[in-house]
Image (cartoon, rainbow, N blue to C red; front, top):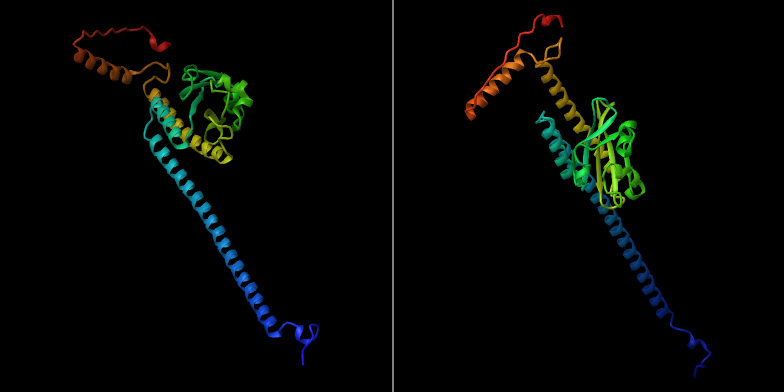
Length: 275
C-alpha cells in the first residue's frame, strides 16, 4: 500500500535529528572550550603585559638608583667649585637626556641668580647671565622654592627669553637647589625640544638630582670658607702669616723654574695692633 506525501512517512527520521542535535551540541561545547582557552590566553597575555610593565618600572628605578649613586660618588670626589659645576652639568645631561640646561646660584647678597655653568644655550645665556630674584621662571622658583614644569615653552616665551632658553618650542623644567632641605641657594634648569617632553616623574627625578647637587655645592662652599678662614686673621680679616709663607714658597719656586729675579718688600706699620 502506498504512503501519501502528507502521511507519516513524510516526517524526518528522528534518529537523524538527534544525530544532528548531538553534532550541534558538540560544536557549541567545542566553541565554548575555545572561548575559555582564548580567555585564558588573553588573561595570560594581560598578566605578561603587567609583568613587563612592572619589570620596566623596576629597570627604570634601578637606573635611577645607579644615576644617584654615580652622581653622589662623582660629586663628592671634588671640592673645587668650578670642577663641581662642570661635573654636575655633564652628569645631568648624560643621566636625564636633556638638550639644554644650566645651573644658577644666588649671589652673596641673595637678590640675584647668576649662571655658573650651562650647556646648549646661546653665548649670552652662559656663565655670567644674571636675573633678579623673582625675574623669569628661574627667579620665581628661587623666590618661592617651588619647582615648575612648563609643558609648552611657547606659552611662557616672555619668561624664557629672559633666561636665553629658546622659547619657540619644547618643554621646560626648573627645580630649586636647597641645602638642609630649606634654604634655596640656586636652581637647575633644563629644556627638551618637544612639547610635553617632561612628566611629573621627570620633575621628581630632576628634583632628586638637584638635591644631590645642592649637598655637593654646600660641602664645597664650606670647604672654601674654612680654607679662607685658615688663611686670614680673625680680627682684621687680612691674610695671616701662614698664607704669606705658603705664597712665598710658591713664588720662590716659580722664580727658580723660570729663572727670574724675585723681590720681596717688607713693611712695618707702627702701632698696627691699635687698628
